[in-house]
Length: 271
Image (cartoon, rainbow, N blue to C red):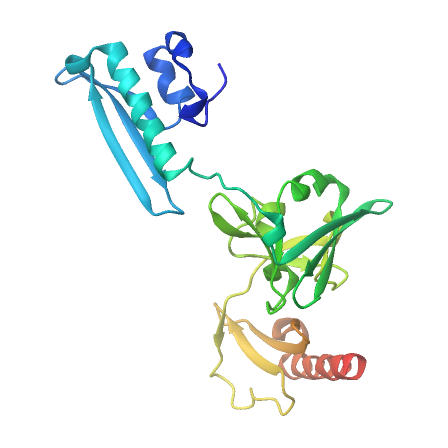
């Protein structure tokens, strides 16, 4: 028996097809309970609409109404909640009112998702693997041109909340993991270009007097446990470039020099 997401899908002629045990599986929002201590049987109706901030519930006891009547009352109650407050998780997408336009172009072994803001004309192109095409096309994507990176700029509305592109592509990604783009192109989300790396948690260092660099965008941090790194950072428009140099690998002074050199290279290349 297939699951029923909305009570409005259930007609009176279908009531006889349900057993008590199947109720909680097949009719969303209605569950059958049996309390052994007092042999009490009842149907519980629950309705939760997080978007609207509504949470309702009611109980219908078999001892009071009888089995079939209690079930019918529960179904009608749930239907009333849906008619009054809407089916949870559902909404109508009026694309004519959207500020962002989505378009797709399939290349040889990948596809390009282009997001364009209708009001400003700002656009962003993302490269994605063909294996993700069906999943990406099943969502409508929004573009925030003021975000720090494409990973934060591209969002969709999923499970009643705003969700980043990376959360859709990598649902098993751990919170401490960081998306690394092999070719340094933050808009290239093709599978062979992405690795998930454990993020580094930093605390500002105070163990060296010479931790300050005279070059803007170069700073020193210590990992938890005392391992130090020099960080080179450079902002290009609305996106940021960062690179880390380990003191354990290069020594304190060499790591600092490499960070400063990297910062200078970005300034010369990108202006």
